[in-house]
Image (cartoon, rainbow, N blue to C red; front, side, top):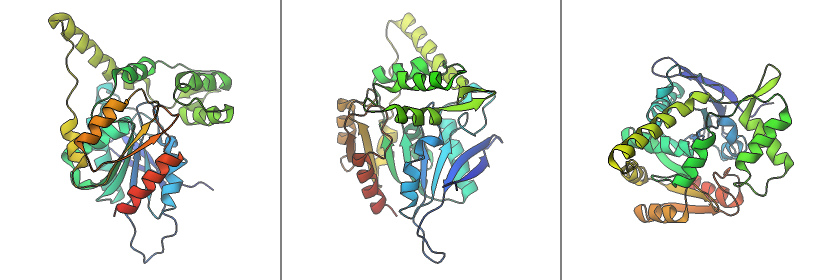
Length: 304
């Protein structure tokens, strides 16, 4: 029997969207429920990334909704690729909260999911009771950003399952050096869908369109001025998220996206923020590692 049910809702413009809905465990009908948890994945990922974490959280007595961001998993693809950006995704989360009857939740955001949470804090801060930022923050290393941009939207179709597994291993083995063949099989099942006898990535390749457009615009500015345009300042969003609520940063010990210097700047900007580092793991931890899970458990105990 599945540990979750499928929850479908629509965006403000009518795009069908999906989340995995994990019911809280050990909660009787008359017992006051704890706030639910919304889990949001990274750029090329989907709700399956939380298939191990979500049941653990549900076992603490909280409902968990693991989102398929538009263009990923079972959520519909957007006919306008330029809508693939955190502002749109945050608006989709607002629609999810309304459809699910949720006024406030704890948010767990991996990579892009953390950026979506930052944006959400800027226009609907009352919806966020506490938050976990998984290997992401108001600034990121250009090294990791370039690596992710380099493969996003470029994976083709694989006819053989072994080739799909090999692809996942090739782009992730630096981040997960301890993975064994069974781990890579599971990672590939989270990454690919079967289609007409072959295997395709579980996301719309057009999610790369805005990324490439931004890169082209930056290159044009640099060519005209001799200087690359500065990245947007997201620290005001980070400070808004950190204000008056429990906040946790989980960092992969060998992450190329959140390096130690960035982590230190984040901790200086939000002194009360809890911090956990997962040794021997890069971008991004799965959050079931002992160091990550212990910190998440502590945050959940402090959250309403």
